[in-house]
Length: 132
Image (cartoon, rainbow, N blue to C red; front, side, top):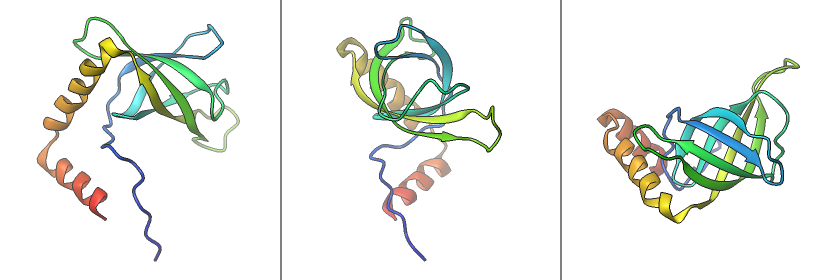
C-alpha cells in the first residue's frame, strides 16, 4: 500500500467565511464562502468557469466580529469539478501570497483562536495526520 505524505504546512480548518474575489485584471467581484482555510491557503466553491489554474486573485475575507474585511492576494493552485454533470460547481484551492500588513495579525489571531478552541479529539486527529 502506498503512503501519501501530507504536503500542507498548516492545519486546515473547515470554516465557512463569507468572502469575495476578483481575478486580477478583471473588476468583476464574485461572492462565495470558504469551505476550509489555513494560514497559507483556502478552498471555496464556484459555480462558473471564470477561474483557471495559476490565475492571480484578490480576496476579501469577512471574518466574524472583525469590523473590516481582510484583504489578501493569492494564486489558484488547483480547480476540480465536483461531479460529471455539465453545470456542476468547482472546488478551487488558493495559495495565499500576500495579506495586507494591517490585516496579518488579525487574520493569524483568528486562525489561532479557532485552533485553540478545536475539540480535543480533532486536535489529536490533526497531529496524527501530520505525523504519518
